[in-house]
Length: 102
Image (cartoon, rainbow, N blue to C red; front, side, top):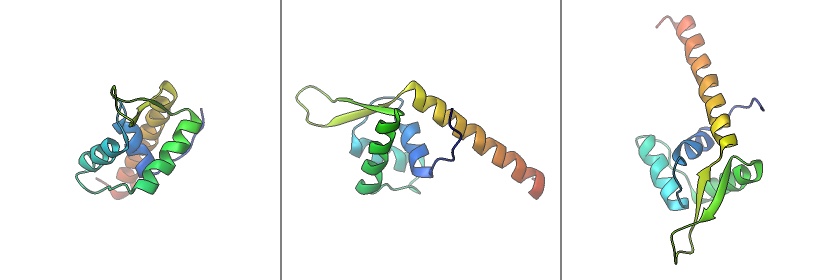
């Protein structure tokens, strides 16, 4: 498993895809999950989606019947990547608490 730090946008996109969503749905869910702090521009979102599909972290599926919208969902590999990122963030917090004394 590759050990890389994810951008905040990529991490939130992965977290938002436990159930299938189309692009605008991802934008809304990420904004909601971050309490409005993270707002994805279309270029950022679709660039990240393209990269994550290429890496096998998410897959595109046909949306609702009679809809032209493609939906995306996280794969097992994507779940493993998100889990590794969560572990990395927990380690950062633990080390920060040691230094700061909280």
